[in-house]
Image (cartoon, rainbow, N blue to C red; front, top):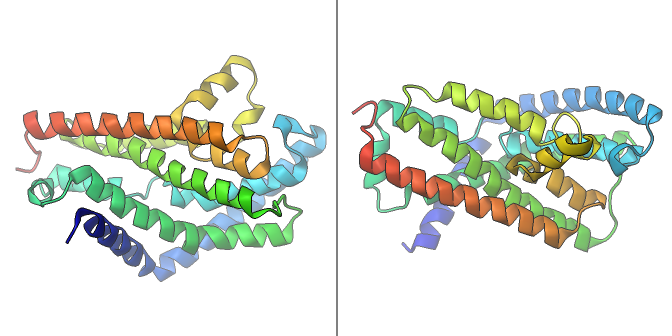
Length: 266
C-alpha cells in the first residue's frame, strides 16, 4: 500500500470510528444547540447596544455564533481530539508500538485527526449551524466561490489545530501527565480563537496580539472569509504559515523525544 493510500485509510478509519458513537454525537448536537442559543441571545443584546461591533452586523454576529458551535468539536477547541489518545499511549509506553510501524508518527496521527474532524464537522457541526440559520436571521453568502474559499480556510484550520495539539501531546514525553498542559492550552484557545467573542471586537494592542496568534487561524480566520471582512488569499497565507511552523516544530520535538527521552511506561 502506498503512503498516500495508507494515510487515507487511517483518516477513513478515524471517520468511521467516531461515526459509531451515535448517542454521543446526538448529545453533542443537543449541547451545541443549547449553548448556541444562549450565546445568540447574549450577542443580540450586545449588538443591539453596539451595532456593527467588530465590523459585523447582527446577522453576521449570529452566524459567527453558529460557526463557533460547529467548529468546537471539529477543531477540538475544548479537547476531544486524538491528542488524548496519543498522550495516554505515551504515558503507558504503547507509543513504542507506533514508532515501530512503517509509517510516520506525525502523519499517522494527523490523518486520524482529520478523519475525526471531518466526522465532527458533518455529524455534529452542520445540524446546529443549520438550525441556527433557520431560526434566526443569518448571513449566508449566495455565491459558491465564497463557500469554496471558506471550506479551504476550514481545512487549513484543521491543520493548525492539529499542530497545536500535537505539540501538547508530545509534552507527555517529558511529563508524567500532559493533562495540565492540555487544559491550559484549551483555556487559552477558547479565548484566543474567538470562541467567546470575535477577535475583531478586541481593542488596540490586545486585538493585534490575539489576531496574530495561531488560535485565530482556527475560528476567526474562516469566519471572516465567510462573513466578508477577510481576504481569502491573505487568510490562507496566515493559516498556512502557522501550519508550517507548528507542524515543523512538532517534527523537531518528535525527533528530540524519540531520540533522548525514555518512554514513561517502558
